Every structure is written in C-alpha cells, then in structure tokens.
Image (cartoon, rainbow over all chains, first blue to last red; front, side, top):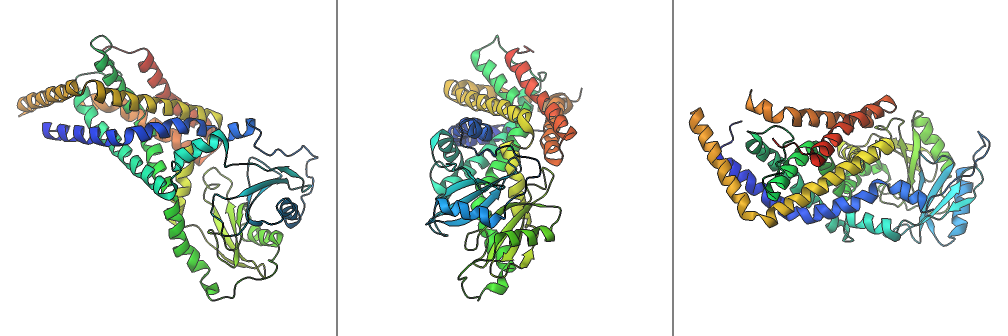
Length: 387
Length: 57
C-alpha cells in the first residue's frame, strides 16, 4: 500500500492523541463492563431476581388487571408507569411504579408478581449495590445525559484510534510475519509487538463494541426524535383531546387487541399514558418477535386508554431500530454463556491493548519517535527503490 | 509475495470470522449460536497463543 512517510507521521499523531484522550475512560469502561457482561447471572445469584414457583403445566393466568391490583396494594400511593414481561422468566410480570406519572425516570419501585396467583414474588432493587455503581459508571458516570454523551465522544475517539492503528499496522509489519512478538530485544519492543498483535486480532470486535456503544449513548436523543417524529404522528388525532380522567380501560383488553393485531408477536413492555414512551391518552403495548433479531425490534401498538381500541401500530423508524440492534452487539447477551465468556476474553484483551498503549507512550516516548523516524526512512528507501 | 497480502491475510481472515460470529448469533439460534461460538473462539485462541507463547520472527 502506498503510504507516504508524511501520512505515516500523520496517522501516528492521530493514533497518539485520540488514544491519549480516551484511554483512561476506555479503561474505566472496560473494567466496569466486565461484571456487566454477567449482570443477569450476578443479579440472580445475589437474590435480587424473582423466581416463580413450579406449578402444573398450563396453570391458567389471572386477568392482568387483577395481578396489577396486587402490585398497587404494595404501594397504594404510587401509580403504575410500566409493566414488563421477560422471555427468560415465564409466568412473572414486573411492575414499575412511582409516586407520580412524571417522576424522574430513575425513581421507581419495582414489584415482581406471579401471573397465575398474583403473589408478590420480589421487590427487586436496581438502584443500589455494586452492580448499580458499575452500571452507572459505565453508562453516564453519574452525570446524566451530559455524562452519557461525553462517553459517546470518548467512544468516537476510540473508533478513530482503532482506524489510525490499522493504518500504522501496515508500515510496522511490512517485514515481519503475523503474530511476531520480539521478546528478546527490549521490553518496549515486546509490548509494542504485543499491542499491535492483540490490537489487530481484536479490531473488528473492538470496532463493533465501540461503535454500538456510541450509538447507545444516543438513546435519549433517539427517544426524543421518536417522540417528535413517529409518536406525535401516530397520536396527532388526540392533539386537542381533553385530558384523561377517571378509570382507564382495562389492560387485559389492551393486550388482547394488540395480540390480535400482531398474532405472531409477544408483549414485552406496556407504557402507561403520560410516560415518555406514549401519549397522554394511550397505552403503548410494545410487541417483540420470536427470533433473537426480531425480539429486539419491538413494535408499539397504541391503544386508546379510554375505550380500549387500537389506534395505530407501526414499525419503528430506522434510527430506533439501529439503537435496538446496537444493544445486543454491545452487551454480548445474545448468544448464551459461551458468548459472554468470549466477550470477557475480548474485553480483557482490549484492557491489555489500552494498558500497553499507555505504557508505550509513558515509558518510551522518545524511542517511539525514533521508531517512526526509522519507519519513515524505510518508507523513503522503499519509495526510492520503487521509483 | 505481495506485501499487502502478506501483511493483511491473517488480520482480514480473523476480522471476517469475528464479523460472521457476531452476526450469526443475532440472526439465528441453535446451530447459528454454535457457529458463532466456534468462529469467535478462533481470534480468542490467536490472542492467547501469540500473547502467551510469542513467536520471535
């Protein structure tokens, strides 16, 4: 490849500066990300997860509104905002409540119930403990949306660092075989070679996890776009409708209407009227498909919360689907335990690449400059030969 | 040998295996998961092989 000495120098500068700025944050992300790979397992082991008792196959389920009444009895002064069903936990419904419909999103009381008996199984806590600290550090460093977007910026630098690293791999490896690590010359060369080798082997994993991480940091922007775009189009006829008063239509009916409209899909989440994921007048019943891919591409059915009729049901716009597809590719939670273990290995390798990169800069800044100078000379020689 | 090919054949092969593995588990279950685990294990083994038992040239 015809890389001139000038462009080697330029890519080196790009690689150095983008890496330097993002490395400490990326290290934090890789370290906090390690336990997060096993979030479900740790949650399960720490007893924060509801477990439904074994009952005879086909035990009938209660009307969902009757189950929800039992959740309300736990927090009588709260309102329901969201109701969840998880594929991995059949027979369990989880209710998210808050003291008011427009409380901040991170204020929530969760109640998990058995759908067959209405028994309260657990009141899981997601806002305390070790995993919560890891989660918050990883997502926004306890700094809300600005923190999230800042980490997104660090992610963009990480992606640029990887691309510039690829550009430097060619001139460095021109005379060597793949996998070469010079262990006998100097510690610096050994770690330089290790950095290059591990970096090039894991580059597509790091690019995918880095880029999907950046997309995840845009979740609030994506939600905002959806609210002013598709959602407001779907609820336009209700723009001047009087505010909802009195009893809502029953949720069981809303779910049945949604299932009728999409018989091949399952209910995943219901958002209550007045939450950010729907209008003031509708239940949003989010439906998921059956394959790993379509299970991610949830689709909202809007149900009039007064008369229980289906108002509209559409596929999500591309930018919402892009976010949904980015999530599994970032989390590594879509291929069982073996995939999680592979994620752990690649995460640790990335930590090594980051640490060796930092070491190379701190310990031997000058030697590295000299190396680049040598590479430039070699390039020059080559060019003279080629000319 | 062509320099580009010499430098990039293994990195490109590993990148293709990785991309296939990442997408396979997303597209299907069952055999697709197994294919995903196999293809992603290869770059993981390469890291361990050359990281722990370096080749000197």
